[in-house]
Image 1 (cartoon, rainbow, N blue to C red):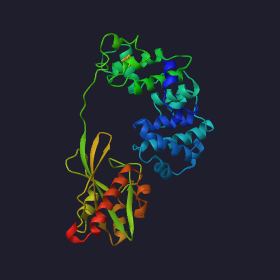
Image 2 (image 1 turned 90 degrees about the horizontal axis):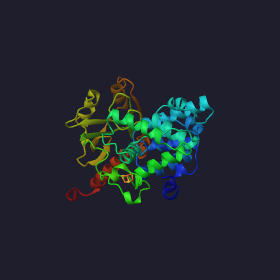
Image 3 (image 1 turned 90 degrees about the vertical axis):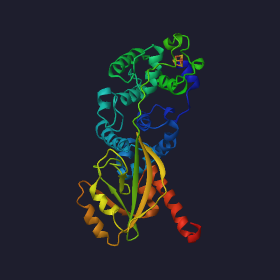
Image 4 (image 1 turned 120 degrees about the vertical axis):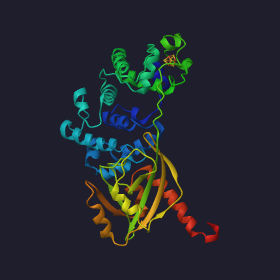
Length: 356
Ligand code: SF4
């Protein structure tokens, strides 16, 4: 497998040198993001924050801006907190023991094992979804890998299976195999384990791992409010809401049928007779939510009236910003989609009435 890996591995920037900080950042970014989507953001992020010191010294808002497009902003927050801990307690070097690695916010067993094995050659096996699939097939594990008993078994198996001389390469090879060859419909003819694979030998390579069909998608409408006053837009941030707990966003309301509690303070703005609702919408998804994005607009003549209304919301922070900076101030790919909808509407407004 190691020969196969050294010959066929993808040329990825976090593999160029075995720098623990760069590997840590890549592992955190890859937690819920595909490699292709993560790469351009990763390169720019490391250009701006090449060391834990640079990340520690940056403002949280700037870090969020460089994180834009990856979603799950708590990961970026944890990276910044982790960089602070690495600088303060470990002189800027990612710690070398498993226990110390686990003290870094956002670092669990998988990330600790990945960084320690790849950067420092420590003998810890990684176990992510791809590795579970490869191991289950290789060792003919037919039970559901998401059950806790099977997961424990696979964890032990992975640790026994790791190559003690090259634990980092072994882990990367297992992950690469799961990403390129031992994919859900496996390409066994290209696999270095072809002659030793339990699932292949019993003709069960497409049945293993046992799959559990989960349909837990939630359909949601998110209606964003362009609330203008004195030529600026309002952005808010507060931990009590369902989405964007850690970044500024336009105020928004969850609408339609949904399982979440409404926030009464928003109703006052959304029921204002001066509110103009745009009918166009765009699609987006966050975790298991399929989202229909819409937006509405409201001009508030007296800014202080708005501020009085929102000042009582626990933990709510707000700021006013130029509309041209929406992408930076609301660092989510949603802001780009809203701007597209908004530009479309502005163009329609410019047309003579009969052409709209
Ligand atoms: S032989 Fe096929 S099923 Fe077995 S590990 Fe390789 S790709 Fe996966």
